[in-house]
Image (tube, rainbow, N blue to C red; front, top):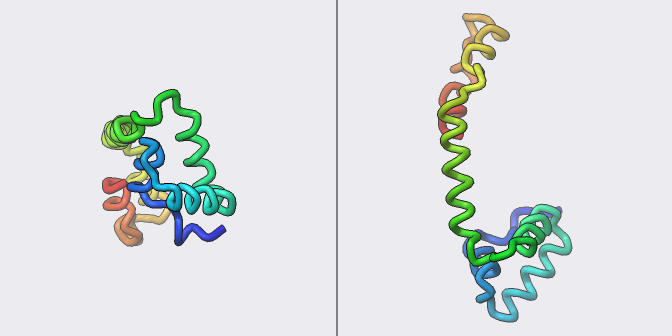
Length: 102
């Protein structure tokens, strides 16, 4: 599965809005046949009752994830430090910054 040439978000948005040109639509379908990730995305969009709402649904989900992550650190900063020991610390792997940016 080659995901380096996956469908970009702008094309997915156009697909959801039913505004892709025939050639772009054919390319999307062909790629989805050989890429499990894009096949799943396509299936999700196809299953939506109103696929024109895709962009707003994505924004809603991103907002919910951000709220969840900001409210739940999962104790990773303390947990990693206790496993590695105080001398190695969580920062040696960038976990403190990485969790905050996820």
